[in-house]
Length: 354
Ligand code: B12
Ligand code: SF4
Ligand code: SF4
Image 1 (cartoon, protein in one colour):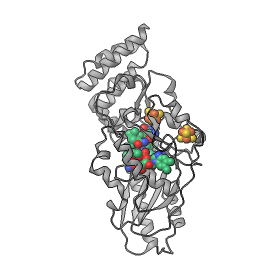
Image 2: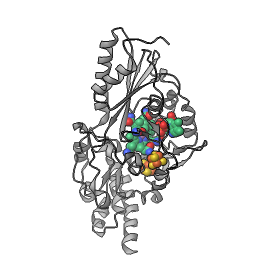
Image 3: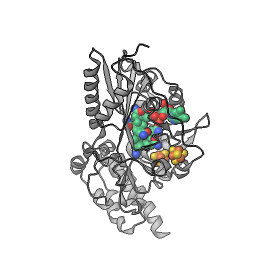
Image 4: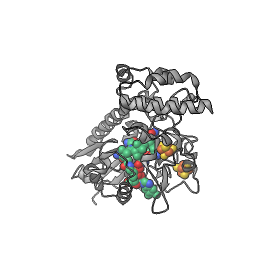
C-alpha cells in the first residue's frame, strides 16, 4: 500500500482532536472478520424487529466499500457524552430514568458537523482530490468493529466499545476515505474474569455466543424494548424495567472501567428536558412531547412508545398515589398506551396489596 507522506495517521488523529473528538484511529476499509459474528447474531433472531439489520440494509455491512466503492481507509472517532450528572432519581421509583446518551440534544447532528469539519481539514492537508463518506449510527457499517480495529478500545462483555482511559460513554463516528492510510493496531481485551455486566442485567439479555464470548439478545434488552420496539412489552420483561423510560445504562454503570469515566462539557450534550416526575410525563400531550423531545434522541420512541414506557414505570413504582394517573392512561386514545397502562395497573395493584 502506498502511503501518503503528508497525511499520516498521527496527523489525522491530531486533526480529529482539533475537531473535538477525544479518540481517533484508522482501520482498513475492508470486510471485517466480525461480519460472521453479525450474521450469527441475526440468524439467532437477536435483532428482534429491527428490520434495517435483518434485510438488505443489514447485508451491506459485509463490506464498507458498499458505502463508498473507492474507500481505502476508515477514520474512526469517539466522542465522550458523559456529562457526569448521573440522574439522582435512580433510587426514586416515582421519577423517570433516561439513559445518559439521550439526556441532551441529538448527537447525530453534532457528530456529523464535526466530521464534516474533519474532512475539510484533511482535504486542506492532502491537497489532492479524494472521496469521502461520513457515517454516524444510521449507515450500514459495523461501527464498533471498525472502532476496535482502529485501536479505539475493546468490545466488552456488555458488547460496548470500552476505552481503557475514557471508559465506554462514547459515541462513535467514521469517515470513509479514498486515501490509503496506515491502520492502527486493535487494543487488547481488558474484561478479564469480570462478569458484572452479565450479572447485573435485569432481563438476562447478555447471552453466551458460540465461541466463549457474549452477545446481546435485543429482544430481551430494555434499551431495545424502550427505544426501538413498537409493540406491547411482555409483562415478564416490563416488570423488570424499573423506572427506565428510555434506554438502559445498567451494564455500563456497573462496569469498573467507567468508575473514573471521562466527562464532557460539550453544551449540546448538557442534560435538558422536563421534570422527571412520572405523573407529569404521563400528562404530556402529543404537542408537548413534540416541543420537548424533537431533536433529542427520545424522539425515536415516538409519542405512543414514550407513554407506554411511562405507564410501565408507573406500574413498577409501588406507589399508590400513581394509581389515579395510571387509570387515566388506560383510557388513552393510543391503544398501545391504553393496553400497556392496563398491564401496569394490574402490577401496581398487586404490589400495593402484597
Ligand atoms: C442496533 C443498535 C442497538 C441495539 C442492539 C445493540 C447490540 N449490542 O447489538 C440496541 C437498541 C439494543 C442498542 C442499544 C444501545 N446502543 Co446502540 N446501536 C445499534 C447500531 C445501530 C447497530 C449495532 C449492531 O449492528 N448490532 C449487532 C451486533 C452483533 O453488533 P455490535 O454490538 O455492534 O457488535 C459488533 C462488534 O462489536 C463485534 N463484537 C461484538 N462482540 C465482540 C466480542 C469480541 C471478542 C470481538 C473481537 C468482537 C465483538 O462484532 C459485532 C458485529 O460486527 C449501532 C450503530 C452501528 N451502525 O453500528 C449503535 C451503537 C452500537 N449503539 C450505541 C449506544 C451508545 C447504545 C446504548 C448505550 C444506548 C442506550 N443507553 O440505551 C445501548 C447499549 C446497549 C448494549 N449493551 O449494547 C453506540 C455504541 C457506543 C459504544 N461505546 O459501544 C453505537 C455505535 C452508536 C454510535 N454511533 O455511537 N443499540
Ligand atoms: S442495556 Fe440494560 S437490558 Fe440491555 S443488556 Fe445492558 S443491562 Fe441488560
Ligand atoms: S462489567 Fe466487566 S465484563 Fe462487563 S464490560 Fe465491564 S469489565 Fe467487561
